[in-house]
Length: 101
Image 1 (cartoon, rainbow, N blue to C red):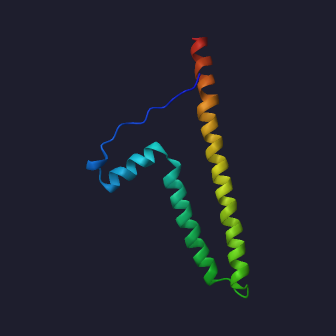
Image 2 (tube, rainbow, N blue to C red; image 1 turned 180 degrees about the vertical axis):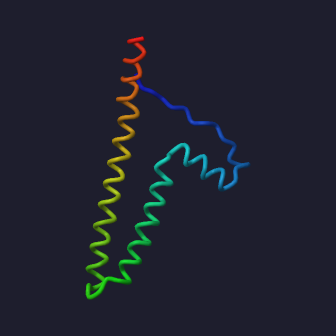
Image 3 (cartoon, helix red, strand yellow; image 1 turned 180 degrees about the horizontal axis):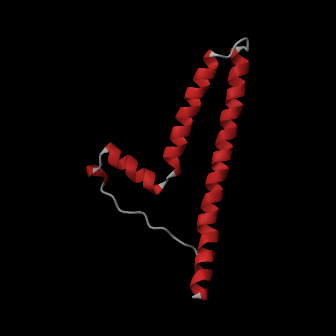
């Protein structure tokens, strides 16, 4: 038995940019968090680049790339884990609770 979620019907012709962003944030709450994290990482990287000391630019950029890729992998793992829990485990708990009552 597959659980299907229906998406709300929205008239896109009358939607402003802020309304669209708010709707997208409600549909996928990790997107704004991911965007904020991306902007934060870029700002932190720019700050660290200015204060890198004697380290060569190529070595610094390689280190920054590895850190950025690691953060993407961790974020994807957390998102997939949350989706799996939400889709498979929580419905089982809710159905078990309703059977007890």
